[in-house]
Length: 533
Image 1 (spheres, rainbow, N blue to C red):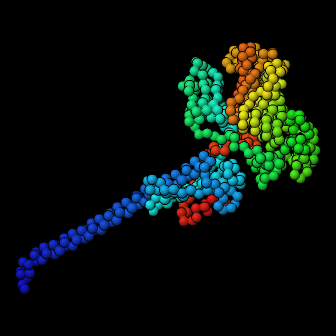
Image 2 (image 1 turned 60 degrees about the horizontal axis):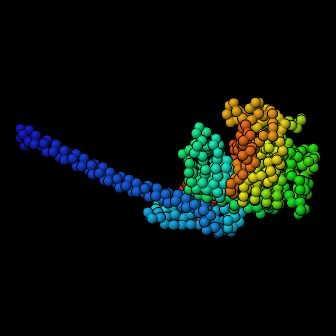
Image 3 (image 1 turned 90 degrees about the vertical axis):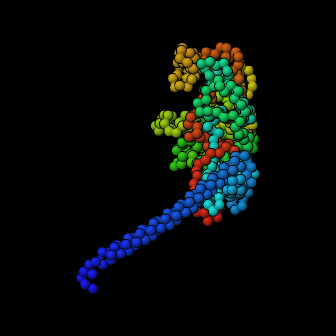
């Protein structure tokens, strides 16, 4: 072929080569697009599956939470099928159910300590609840722990009935009533005020006329006061007969008082216990130990016969039958106590608490140290003796498991005139304010310097916990009120009583609070293996 012929054919060959290259590029682009489409389809499918499993997982978690809620409700209502499947002495139970929306749960729960069977199981300090929730192929597990709530948070607790308040009353702790809560509707500028939450099993007919700073609820669940205290267990703990007899980690034995039965460690016989005669800080009677003395006598450890060391005392005092008490716990005599009686507790005179600090040289209280709190727990009544003074101070949490609080009897004339002045009737730290102490309003109130037969003031500083309503007579007697120049009844909730509670103070049998919630990511092991050992 000649040169001219080759030159005439060259453009055609170039066009053919260019067309082949374009086709190849197009095929490559189409292949890449196909791969991208396939990838997007796979990603979309994976995301749909992941999204579906995530939704199922949330449903499984909801089923687990439902199981925890039902277990807590069973414990609250005292209806859990308690047993002891692992035979370790601690009550436990298992429940399972399928939910209407397709989820299901299995729950195991166990008490934190050994308290016995039946209703005694609910007196355990707490419960651990472990639940597995399942929805389709998703599994979630959670563990929750609950402990008893406290009676001590209540300024006033009435288990079975309602109660009423007068105009101007200010309640600084929570209030619970087992019936209706009565509030006056004609207080004007001096309404009843509740600074904390209020719960009424019944109704609050005049709720609009009160001030509820943290709200209220009616139709509340009943709280069982009667069964919250097992006096047989309390007696055994006081005497050191249980496996663990400490109170909040302190001590190993208390003071059991039953003079007719031959147990009178304080030597008081039928006379009242005078708290002022204790010395919980004696380092000279039996060195090098710090021992407890009463009226100058070293107390004996009831189990080993040796001196009762302060570190061995758990803070419990148990009276068989009636317990009679008065006095001051402050400085060397200061220690928080819980005093139990299988019948009544009778208050003979002032009960005053202070702090544990004292001057090492003089031994006198100096206001330092921890605050001291006392619990008075009676099976039946909390009585004020008929000869208590007209100005009476009670620094204590009062608990009547079957009845209420009141004066034991007598007449107005049986109560001796208080004084002489100066006194601190409103407990504001100023003694002898005259001609008035500005309580409840400036320019009014009692004359704290000039105490007369008309001066009647009852100060109760602490929670009042009773089965039914109490009585403040004679401090609310019509003749007393007619001659009063200030408040005759002052109920002051002790704000430190929950932080520094009386030792082994009873807790509500069926009132609980949450303390922890944890998710368990091991879904293959035995569910009960996640309970505490």
